[in-house]
Length: 440
Image (cartoon, rainbow, N blue to C red; front, side, top):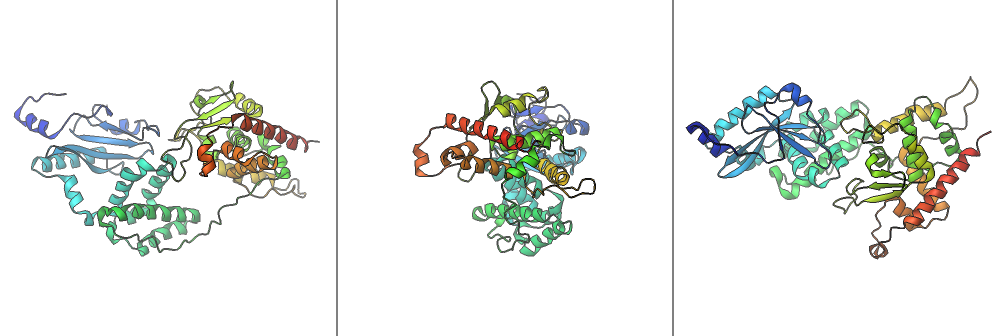
């Protein structure tokens, strides 16, 4: 708590209140200090840092890396938080000037937040995006989905669209924004962007946020047919060619080959493998314990449940040979996430692994061609091989971590740990045999 020492200060005490303990005290913010602020963990989602110069001014840092300015104040006894802008688009000096200006208005009886709510029809699409990200995406979507939506909706491609009044946006405006993406050839991103914009209006329409009564994206046709991706499994010839040489192929670093091995051997999603933490892996007990909320949240789940994965001796051997555990992640990187991501791995497969395997050598005929595949296809391959080996479907589904919504599954809460362990151990041994069969 603090005490007022003058009449002017007394007026400020009526206006501003002490921050909650979740607000970090950073003294007077500096531009260099802002750049060095840590990114909160996914489970923390956001962290506030107050400015020691302008009372009420805070910088909120999100787990996605986005940083936004807010002014906290009281109006009619109610604590309010008005967004000022995003950093670095709005510099520290500009944020202070804007905050001081708002403070003057508040002392004169104004309430910026209430006034904004009362003139919703004037809100821009950018305002609606901020509302959607803070009130819906950050609270209800899976962390990875929320981050991706934020990246798309606040990126350069939609800069012009964000300036338009939210109620005035038409399908033609959205189409024009998608044109920018199409010109650079990012066809899949067109679909992702269209879906993200539609999600904002789908959320806003029933709630009448910013006066929205319809979704302008609903009738807009998709421009790019993704055909559901490649969706294939690797046969024994593919497996021999890929995994018989993967550890020595130029363009495929050790981390990428290790990740591909783990996806194939465990059947877990590429994203789950790449964000694995040493704290969750017990090599002695041969177990990978994914905590609640770690995995992809599927429809109908508020939060992904915990999931334990048996580790075969081959997986334990692979993990045991990795460098010392000086980082929390098994696959660390210098990115804001702190770990490698699926795009990194996809690029290594497409531009390093497949390119090398299918190239001609010494002017002769190329080896048997390996058709394109994605890291996720290795998860599908693991599932297919388990089924082919006679493993019961419910055990395979438990191994993959799929949600079974059938009536039988509701009453069957057995983990099938021993059955899953035996299945993955047998698959690892079969994989060894497939690779050895191609050795001369």
